Amino acid sequence: MHLSERRVLLTGASGGIGLAAAWRLAEAGARLLLVARRCEALRPLAERFPGRITLLRADLTDPAGRAAIAAEAERLGGIEVLINAAGIGHFGAFEQLDEADIAALMQLNVTATLQLTRLLLPQLQRQPQALLVNVGSIFGSIGHPGFAAYCASKFALHGFSQALRRELADGPVRVLHFAPRATRTSMNSAPAQALNEALGNATDTPEQVAGQLLRAIEQERRETWLGWPEKLFVRLNALFPGLVDRALRQKLATILRHARHR
Image 1 (cartoon, rainbow, N blue to C red):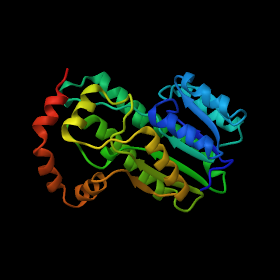
Image 2: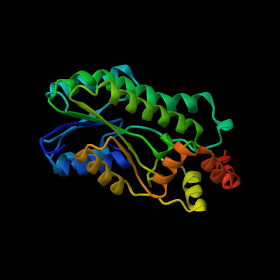
Image 3: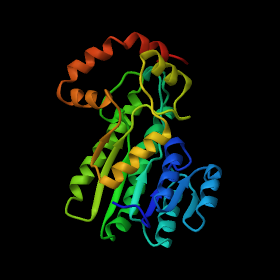
Image 4: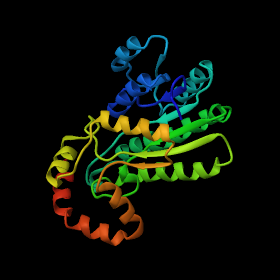
């Protein structure tokens, strides 16, 4: 899909990947409705592209916030592309999580995303051609120690993307799932960053991820996983999960040393 003049709604627009994606989308000529809980970081973008950017401060986890987003999108003529990029991460031993940690993670990464998509789907279905893009994670295909709850939320988003893609196969809406690997954003805690360094994991910048996201949208790739050997491990985990079990078992002591940081 060519993005010039397309009406695009992006959630999580003030975050690392979201902010970088907002700039790339604007540069591609899209008309943007940018949703965030804090819009200050987006004001330079709105000033750079006057008349093409609408900023909306809203809380996705609040039904009233989701309703406001849908109403604003309708006022602007209905959306052609929905990019669900809002989310939070959590690195830590599962035994150390409390109810609030798990509830917040699942509420934003899964429940709010599904509920907002449900509200906006009629707008997408009215278009001759439309895209729903769910920004997930490599950890939506590989269960990784220290990220149990986060993996659960991203596996759920991946499954949702796959199921809805098949449900909408005879209509105008195409569903894409985009899965970055570790990215250098503020969402990663200091222990998570330390783990990546200890294991020698490659990480991407938000700008690199945003560039790949636009490429996936333009090419309408149904499934995108970023990074090597991460792509290989996704395939291995699907076909031979025991191999991945053994590979991660060798790193478990290092992972748990960083995960039990509380």
